[in-house]
Image 1 (tube, helix red, strand yellow):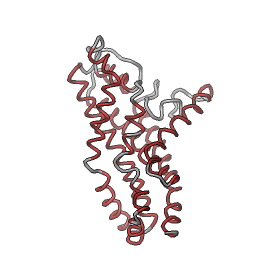
Image 2 (image 1 turned 180 degrees about the horizontal axis):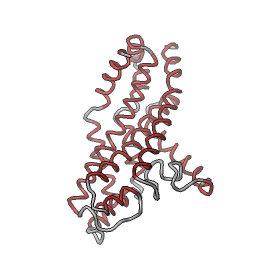
Image 3 (image 1 turned 120 degrees about the horizontal axis):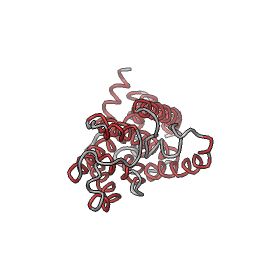
Length: 261
């Protein structure tokens, strides 16, 4: 356990590099580009409660949520394997401890990009518009805005979408290991999202719209018709299980790669 904690601390130190802040600023830029017209035009007085969900419907969300969380750290496992740094870490701390630490650090890095980016983006929206005016949809976090709450819906929005960043970060590392290619870390989550979105869309007649698996609820949106606690809880369980499954596959793959030199 001490080896795991020591390795995790070192990996987190690498994962939470200044590049996380740069990616968070890029997140704000992409989200701004997605709603620049409404934000500066006729919807300027609609409120954060309207423009924040609206920014999730722009095409820029694919870059914001599926690419940016992978940039600071997701490719680092393949880089370590290519430079034989992974051999040093596995000898020092153990193969599974090293891989688990890498996976957790990738998740934390991805979550930090989106979490910090969301906070900055909400701050930018607040400069131009009041907290609440009208609502774009009836998701449970927006409902809190409309009830006059501020801190709680902001916290829930940040946590909810930081979880998206977490699984994207782990997913990027997973695909880069499978393909043995750094580029796969950035492209893998985007390809997976497009494939699963098509499959889930075809199955939407059999899926509960309140389910985390309903198209969109697991990446860019929040399920309508549920409580805020249920929405965040189900998203947390989904992300933890999904990330754990990918890391479980990564552990023997890394062990084999290190053993084969």
